[in-house]
Image (cartoon, rainbow, N blue to C red; front, top):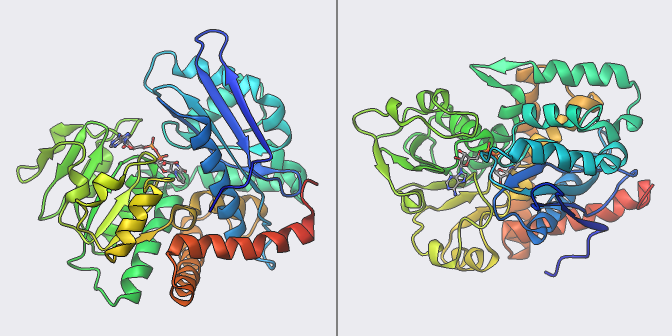
Length: 394
Ligand SMILES: NC(=O)c1ccc[n+]([C@@H]2O[C@H](COP(=O)([O-])OP(=O)(O)OC[C@H]3O[C@@H](n4cnc5c(N)ncnc54)[C@H](O)[C@@H]3O)[C@@H](O)[C@H]2O)c1
C-alpha cells in the first residue's frame, strides 16, 4: 500500500544547534489533527510522516457516531535529538515556539517516545502556549468543565503511576488478552517479553502481569533483564528513572542481564515491542519464537519482516489498533464520554479495545489478510463517512 501524500510536512532547523525537527499533518477533521511529539536521535521526516498517517487511522478506528468525541485528523511531531542530551530541553522549547501557530490552531499534541507529558507541558508553557491540546478547545461544548475534567484525570494515580501513563498500556494488554481468548490460551503460563519499560511498556507489563501472565524479559536502553521464572514487574517499575531506565541494583538473584536484543528471542508466547520504531527487521524476525507480537510502539515491525512472520504463523497485532488507547482516552475524557476516574477509564478502554481487536481479527480472517491490512481496511471504510459528516478541512 503506498501512503497517501500528507496534507502538510514541515522541516524545522534550530538556529542555535542546527538540529532538526518535523511536523507532519496527515489529515484534518473539523480543522484539527491529533498526534504526539517524539524526541530521539536519528528521527526523520519519513518516520514522522508514517506516524502521522498511523494517527489518522487510529482516530478513524475509534469513530463511534453515538459518542461525544468525534475523531480528529492525524499528525505527528518529531525532534532529532537524544532526550538525555543537556541541550534537549532548550531545543524542545524552541521547537514548540516555532510550531506555536500550528499548536494554537490545528495540532493537538502530547508525550511520545523520549518525552513525558510533564516535560511537554512545561516546555509548552515556556513557549507561550496555553496547552498542548488547545487547538481542540473550540470544538468543546463547555470548555471550562472539559478542561477541569481532563486535569482531574491527569491527577489520578494508580499504585504509583499516573492514569495518563496507564491508559495506553491498558489497551495493549487488553488486545493481547483478547487474542489469547480467541485462541483459547489460558493467561497463566503465558510468557511475555517486552522491549521498553517507559510509559507504554511499563503499563503493558503491569496489566499483563496482573492478568496472570509471566513477564520473562524486559529490555530498556541499557540491555535486557530476563528471568524464565518471571520478573518482579512492580519492583522494576518502581526502579525506573524519568526515561524508563531501570536501576539494576533492584535485580533479584535469579534475574540475568543480557544484551539489548535478547528480548527478541526470549522463550515467550507474546512479544511487546514498546520502545523504538523499526525494532524488528527481516534479520530479527528469524529469531522470534513468540506466537503474537503486540505493537505497543509505533511501527516497530518493518513490513517485510511482518510478511515473513505472517508466513510462519506469527500474528502481529498492529500499532494503529493496540496502542490507540492513550490518544482515545484523552479525547473520551475531554469530550465527556468518561469521567476522571481510573475504573471507568479502564472499563471503557477494555470494552473498546476488545471490540476493535475482535473486529480487526474477524476482518483479517474474512479477507485472508493480516490484522494490519484489516485495520487499514476498516479505517478506509470509516474515513469517507467521517469526511461526509464533517468535510475535509473545516
Ligand atoms: N507515550 C504514549 O502515550 C504513546 C502512545 C502510543 C504509542 N506510543 C509509542 O510507544 C513507544 C514508546 O513510547 P513511550 O512513550 O513509552 O516511550 P518512553 O520514552 O516512555 O520509554 C521508552 C522506553 O524504551 C526504552 N528504549 C529506548 N530505546 C531503546 C532501545 N534502542 N532498545 C531498548 N529499549 C529502548 C527506554 O529505556 C524506555 O524504557 C513509541 O514508539 C511511541 O511512539 C507511545
